[in-house]
Image (cartoon, rainbow, N blue to C red):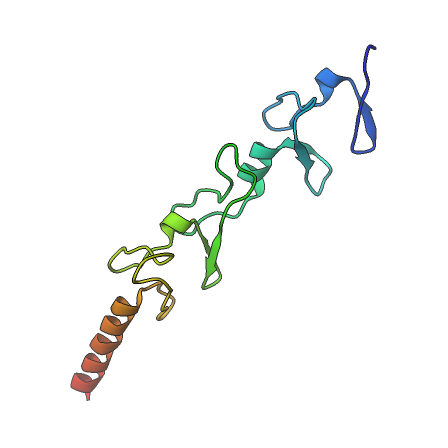
Amino acid sequence: MERILRATGKAYHPQCFTCVVCHRSLDGVPFTVDAANHIHCIEDFHKKFAPRCSVCNEPIMPSPGQEETVRIVALDRDFHVQCYRCEDCGCLLSEGDNQGCYPLDGHVLCKNCNTSRIQALTAKATTDL
C-alpha cells in the first residue's frame, strides 16, 4: 500500500489501473473512458471507437505520437485524407489541381470525371430517344 491511484472517482492499486483491452498499466499514462466507464489507453480507444474509412475500412485515428488527425466526410461517408480519391481516375481529391469532390449518383469523383460521366449519360439518353 505504498501508493493509491485515484481516477474516474475510484481508488486503484497502480498495477490494477490498466486498459480493458490490452491490459497495459496506465499509471502516469494518458487514458480515457468509454460510455460504460471502462478505462482504455488512448490507442485502443481510437481503434475501438474511431470512425472507419469507407475505402480501406481502417479506423481513422492519429498517427503514433500525434494527438489529432484529419477525417474527411463526404456523402455521409468517412475517409482518410489519402483514401479520398476519385473513384474513376484515382486522383487525390484533397489537394492539387483536381481538389474537391463532384459527386454523381453517390460516387466520389473529381471535376473531370464528373463531367465525363455526365457527358456519357447525356449521350446515352440522347441515343435512347
